[in-house]
Length: 52
Image 1: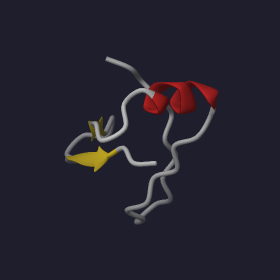
Image 2: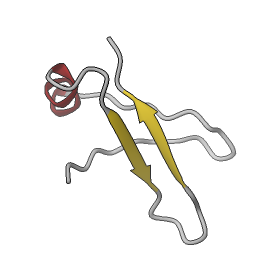
Image 3: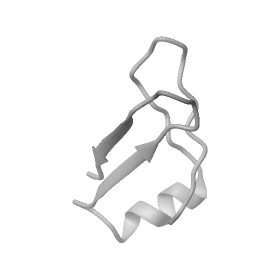
Image 4: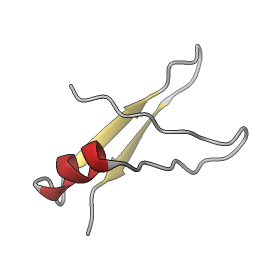
């Protein structure tokens, strides 16, 4: 499992994933499916696709 910091505005469904570690991770995983898990109790998880 790889962990990245993904800030999200309160009430917003948009995530901002940036940084050199993220860039290296996605470079070799185009078309991969990634699951984002929340650390907050009672929140769901979100799946996102990796595209160029």
